Amino acid sequence: MNDNFLSQDEIDTLLSKKADVNDEDLTNEKKDIIGEVGNISMSTAATTLSSILGRKVLITTPRVSSELFAQIIEECKKPKVVSTVRFKNGLKGDNLLMMDVSDANIIADLMMGGDGSGGSESNKILSELELSAVGEAMNQMIGSASTAMATMLGKQVDILPPNVELWDSNYTIDCNNFEYEKTICKISFDLTVEGLIQSEIMQIYTMEAVEEIVNIMLNGEESQEENEVTVESQPEVQVRENPKEDRRAEKVSVQKPIFPDLNPPQVERTTPRNLDLIMDVPLEFSVVLGKTKKTIKDVLSFSNGSVVELNKLAVDPLEIYVNGKLIAQGEVVVINENFGIRITNILSQEQRVQNLK
Image (cartoon, rainbow, N blue to C red; front, side):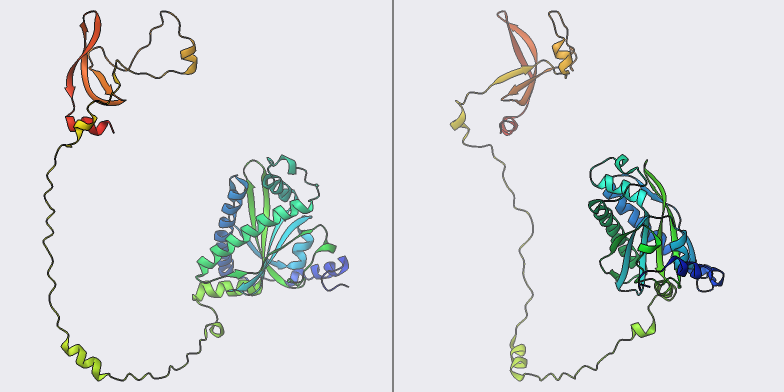
């Protein structure tokens, strides 16, 4: 038999040992710790998936159990897309993230510009391009989950590049990093992607990784062997006194610095002296009776006799503009059968010049 694959008979033999599996290696305390770590890391992963898909993603509180790896493989719904992760630094052991192919199809369709309906066929076979797209999403999820775990553990956690593959039967499952006859830790989450997915995803940890995570969370540090640091004695450094420098130091004269007063200078404000140079420049003088806003539909409906209400009352002063700048206010008068304006309120000459800029 190939080292990486088991026959169905071998799997059945392992499953017959199910009764021998107990939870002594995974106590309630350890389950709580692993569940909390998994909850925080996968919540971060769900946020990452949400940003990738542009949809709301939710996960439930994790369910933690210990089972034979062979039992999980036999009982899980297949085909599945599986991302295998090996810890490089910070932790030992391995981690699997498992997702149903039907869910992977929807995720791939969303990532490739669809609305998710293109991946609704549960039996659809993932193309190489679609598997690559789902693999990228899972890799980003695992990366963000590892970062969250590192923050929670208070140490750096590095992973090797994840390996994403399709498990479509017991005969195509590569278990290089997991032994069928070994007990592992399974963390299950209900996954919901807004309007599209209601399913389950699983994280699987080797017991080696579980023990190390629990040890760090309980003791606040790694095992003593990993914490041993060899401190080498530092060579003694002798400092020779320099008599010349001592003599120089004796000759240095230290004086109290004198600063000028910090009172701000008095600046005399003056009116610009070169206004004569621009006195003959022509300006546009206009009086605004009032303003309002209308839609294109309103404007197109205008006809002879239409009345438009403005934003000013009849008793309000009119606004006087020069080159589009407000300089004064006034009231309407009639001069030899022509309209005129009597200025009732005006800005200072300097303010008017400033408004013309």
